[in-house]
Amino acid sequence: MANLKDIKRRIVSVKNTQQITKAMKLVAAAKLRRAQEAVEASRPYSEKMVELVESLAERSNPESHPLLKRREVENILIISFTGDKGLCGPFNSSILKASQRLIADNEGRGISLCVIGRKGLDFFRRRPFTITMNIVDYAKRIGYGMAEEIAKTVTEAFTAEKVDVVYMVYNKFKNVVVQEPQTVSLLPMELEGAYKEEDSELVEYEYEPSAEVVLNETLERYVVSRIYQALLESNASEHGVRMTAMDAATKNSKEMIDNLTLEYNRARQAAITTELIEVVTGADALEG
Image 1 (cartoon, one colour):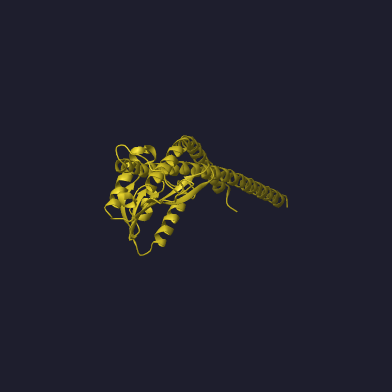
Image 2 (cartoon, rainbow, N blue to C red; image 1 turned 90 degrees about the vertical axis):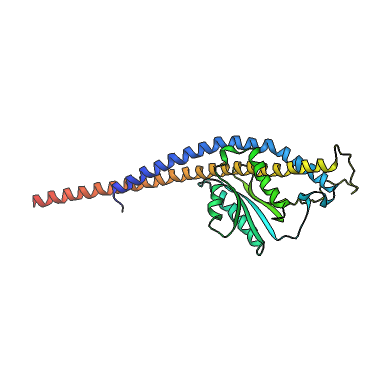
């Protein structure tokens, strides 16, 4: 059995850890509220943008715009959204595993990466992949400008035919306890025909100034919007997972403290009993 001093030291250490995890839970909860509001506010715009661009693209020749062109896939670009810090449960590991599965499914093809988050950068820089872009310490400055920066790098690589398809791998925020890893194709656009009229005939629109200008502008906004939404979803998911993880850690700390306190009391009682036996034995020896 461990001595009293060691047990007491462990109790103090676990209590200090408990204070840290409790504070981190409160911080994550405050950040989660703001991040969740941002996600929910941006989803209608993002979904409507997808609907609009798909509707326009269905009425256009796939060869009319570089972002719609499909080529034989030889090189792929993966945008991987991770966090800058740990202590957030499976948030980072789920994205890294999903990215690795996507890489394995495209074995034999050229792989390049756009890595968002320090954890992803630390993971992939030790592996034989080309990292064309990386952004770290981004949580405090998430904004539309960052999405435009990423979109510019991605679209330039695609239109220059350096890559033939672009994927995004990120966590989609469902609620505080549920975040779903997503692997979605960003470029070229996937047209599923979801917005065709029931009679399967497309209504032709009149464009001002021209169909080419309208499509060019909306496609660029579409790419930025999808990336911006992924940033928001990933950010909210990270705070949700961290809050849940720190809540579980705080509860586990309390349970550990209770167990250590019980062990301490038992050890203290055993020490007192031993001392009493020694005193009684000594007294009996003196009387004898």
